Amino acid sequence: MRWNLRLTAANKGIWKASELQRSLAEHGLVISAGKMSGLWSGQPVSLKLEDMDVICVVLGCEIGDLLIPEPEKVHRPGQAEETERAVVGAETAAPKVIPKRRDGRSLPPE
Image 1: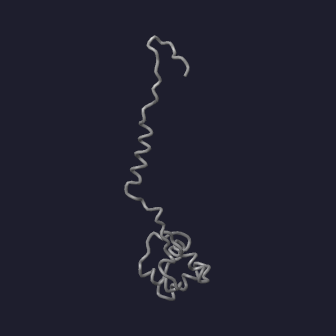
Image 2: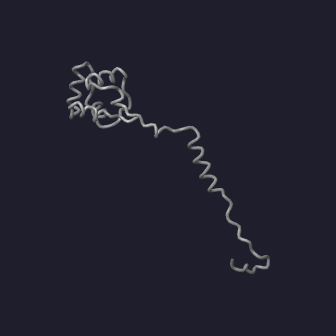
Image 3: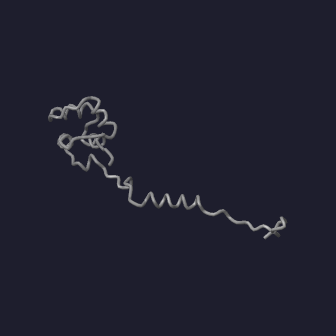
């Protein structure tokens, strides 16, 4: 999932983290400056669902506006195994055999 708070806030006319922090506090969600900075500029490590409700109320948005799915980043079973087999298969392929005469002389050119 991609965190999309900053763009969602900008679409509602909130351009600074401190503005959003103030609005959240007015709705009962007091966030420290450090946590607000993380929410504003990065992807949160953890966030309570109750806090998400307050953020959605303040911004007048839906949860889908804040969290953007990224299904291409999901590991699918068997995907890595197929890649590993292809790499291992390439590494263990037998080297090309070049015939040689028993008496040491070279073969005629092809």
